[in-house]
Picture 1 (cartoon, rainbow, N blue to C red):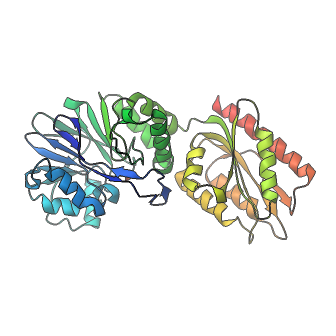
Picture 2 (tube, helix red, strand yellow):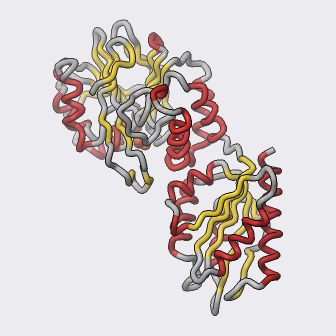
Picture 3 (cartoon, rainbow, N blue to C red):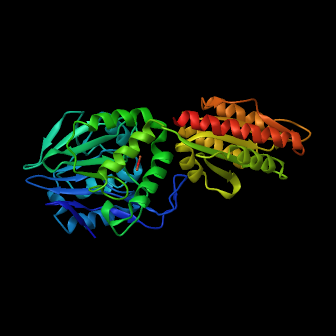
Length: 395
Ligand code: FEO
């Protein structure tokens, strides 16, 4: 069902209730692909949906205006969850001019046969008048892809923010004040950690650009539209984009026969100081998307793996590979783990931590076969060091 944002500005997207694997990100609450229709003297569609839901989008638009009357289609982002239905859309809207930046056009030309499409290439500062309303374009490279941009409608104080401020959150509601704020921010945090985190610097720049915009409503490409909690969302984004750490310690591990698990518990015990939040995460019982989300604001992380075939346990390697891609910054930590006849597990973890440019607090903490009482004491001391560092970084 379409939802009205402003007079003759409507949500016409698709709610994907059942998706759980969003290109590897676990979307526990599903997601939405938000598209918006602005009807003025000229009519514009802002973004589309994933290809399988193109006909739903066209039906939603048809319920409001004839498809052949659409003047503009704005593509803020070429990723297929938003641009996937473009070939269906452009075929159904013969008059439409596709507005995007040059990089977006280049990407779309690799995805589709665009030879019959009419393009209008825009850059930051360009505008298109629809009549009473104007589309202002702001390029936002790397939030989330190099070709990404925002579209701002100053007359309505309305920002179409594409992936930024989105959430993978399927709901029968469209607006932020219709769901609990805690859930909204929890989903936004998870989304930021798993999608936007590698681009903190670029996100901070976009937040600065937003300072000069008068915004009363933010309509992202996923999840709820913000009209009541813009301030809370912007404040959260400022924290996340600057990797502002909390006094929070994670002890993440995989274990083969329990030795690395024993070490993990001892490290956690040592890290349990007043004022420090601690979490023990066993990678085989935890989802990698949740681990990434927990890592976003953790100041210190101990990561452990037993040694298997002179390297890490496979799930430990998978989580570290995923984390390395997301580039969480401003962390301190150390590696730990057990080994048997051959070494390699904790050393491989240490290499990943160094590659992520974390502050390494000590050499890998290791135990052969079983941790002795002395080694468990060393684990407790190392845990304490981790907690003290977390408090220092969070100051
Ligand atoms: Fe929701 Fe980067 O696409």
